Image 1 (cartoon, rainbow, N blue to C red):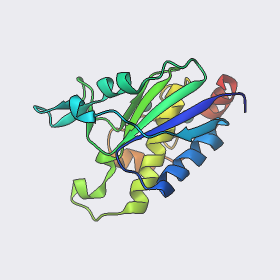
Image 2: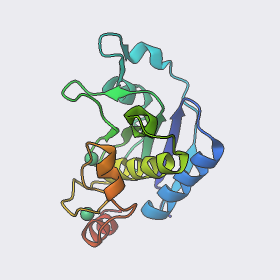
Image 3: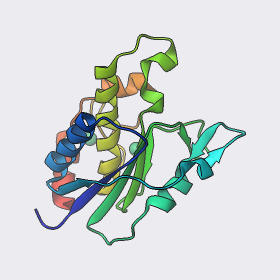
Image 4: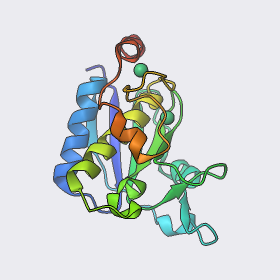
Length: 177
Ligand SMILES: [Zn+2]
Ligand SMILES: [Zn+2]
């Protein structure tokens, strides 16, 4: 460990078991410390009534700590988030930056008329969180079909990916850490 830290910032309720899983993932993959700090922002000010979604860029600006290169903040949410150019996003993060967000809203089977599946939901969310944390550490999108850094538009894309960095992304990441 070299003082690098990822702060997981739950905006909304998350089961502590889920938070622990996410923390372990981040610590393992990025060889860093992690901590969980509750998010005190009022996300209702980022609600866009016309889109019935929340503005991801606004939320990111708010949770940003500007605490330097080594401290990264990842907001995790349950609400539907967007950026102006896209219908919806699973998450977004600054490339080699310090702030990102991820939401599980669009990862829920029931949104697509399928049966609730909590295990699948958590698995998808773990992938999104690691993907966004990958961007924060400097990784760009990867073309490897199963790499976690491949871009995903639909949950089916997420399900195809493994919860792991391909060898190429892994070695790049190791050189960036
Ligand atoms: Zn991405
Ligand atoms: Zn890759």
